Length: 204
Length: 209
Image (cartoon, rainbow over all chains, first blue to last red; front, top):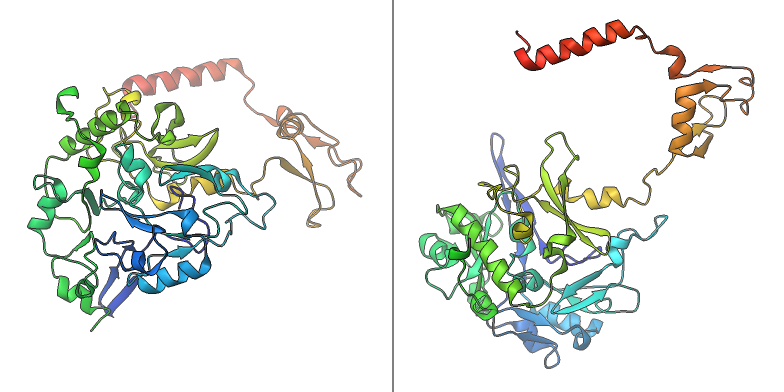
């Protein structure tokens, strides 16, 4: 939220949770979901040319100026099997309180452009989604979800480099993609000791 | 740290990103963290896109007081506005192992430790639209829920000196409120000095000494 200046109803990464079992053998499953940065992104094909593009570095990027219509957003959102797209309809968390707070209207950087999120200005009125926090990546830092997680549950890196930490983890651990059969070729890997059992909690 | 730095272009770093949930791999994590510092230095020296909150002058190191653990935090500032809170990577509370103390804060500004959601919410506390910024003084009979806003300076002055503080409240026109200066009990300098000595002795000898 804080990293990308996100308003109510926009979340780059949601973590739905499901309770399982019956007392005393209970459990809780967390399923973090964000844009999977697909190699074959269905959202890209659903929108006007260059509104959404696949960068050479692998990140699926939005061009806010070309993606500023509710209709284009809805087509992309319908095409995305991961529900990763959100429409910025111009709300603020501190709207309706005695003062709109500066941390919501401060300039923030996305896709190399610095913008203050003010009424009538982009990205308000455009579709939005996770971009692996491009701005800290370009400064040599990690995505906000990776550094913010207190359990350090995530790894980020260059999967095409065999010696990288992520490549090592992928080789060493059972993992899966969500909706792999759709051919989207996502770049997000989910690790689990028993992938099948984990899925069956919600998809028996 | 220089020897661990490897020239990494943005393209190399990002070429194909893989992103993972779960946790399995054991490795020398301090090497990994120092690698992060090195990469951040490389990226910044190549003056790639400026990421303001990664610059040391925009990072304020302090302590979180949202619970009594008191984690070391770094507050990221943008034009004087606190915009994001993360863990101070030189605090063992937010990064294991933490970065060596010998590193200068100028070198570690681009590394984030982890801080819990309560700590993250510090931004919402500090900029809470309903946050009380001045003291409230009772302006009617007790329980009437009538208040007037006064400055903290006036509040301190009235609490210390007392006086006819509620002249404007019906029934309390002639009530003199004693101030702290009237009620403090320890006035004997010899007792105060003896207590100060005891404190020093506890510090030197420990509580059982």
